[in-house]
Length: 74
Image (cartoon, rainbow, N blue to C red):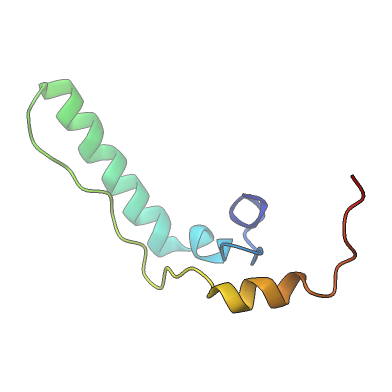
């Protein structure tokens, strides 16, 4: 979550894409359509927008990114 909030690459998500003009435009458009659908009480099915370049790190990459960290104490 901090990666998204801070606009940086985190261990699971690269949050930089959420701080681009392209994302802001896409999010504003989606929000506008949701508000319009809600006001009209329509039955239109809206789909979530797809973020360009969205990917989840491969499990091996994720494990390797934590490999140099000391284990936590119970």
